[in-house]
Image (cartoon, rainbow, N blue to C red; front, side, top):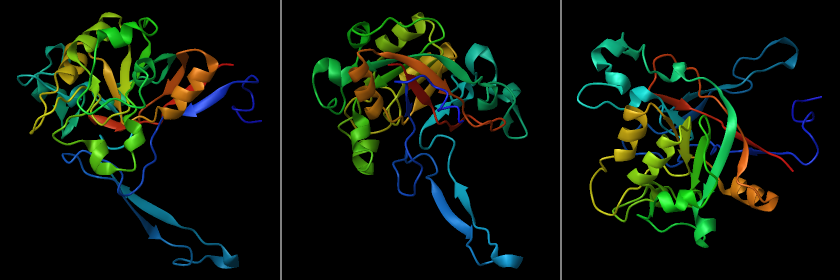
Length: 267
């Protein structure tokens, strides 16, 4: 009997991670995902017809569905809690605030399904998700994981549109981030590549939500999530709450790492 077989009848497990594949959307400032077979079946045959095959994978810590560690951002040379960057680093790795120090999350999750609430298929480019959008959903509790759906995952197979251009990308604004931080959430996730609202206009965004959540409050972020199936599942169940299970890869001293989060939805 597998763990999934042990779940009660009517319980659904939803994978919230996007697949890792060559050519998938990635921020131009991060190394893309690369994959190649290192050895094929038959390259090194063993007696009795036995063969093995394996691959090599290369990717940045902030590519695909991933979690940001608190060490991902600094302001005036200091990390969250006023820790100087120079003191947090050792041998090119963060001995403080690294992704390996993030505890596994098994907690209540809440989905803020903004397109469904606004009665649209997905949010338009550059749309800000504000406090009113979140207040229309469940009130988060301390330790919750709050996920924001914009519908942007529908563009996953159109890499250029998903990453965004000068028209902007939807996401939470600073007021919404402050509202979530004020409720004491453990992590905030979204289905976009940077989680926060990127208004229309050229050039890199200042990322005030990253600054507030990661630097000021020490709240981890989860980006590039697959939330479409979760939206349908929760809507059918008549709820916005679920059991969230997830842990980033235990990469020592990294500023971020892939994560494969799961949502367990009751009948």
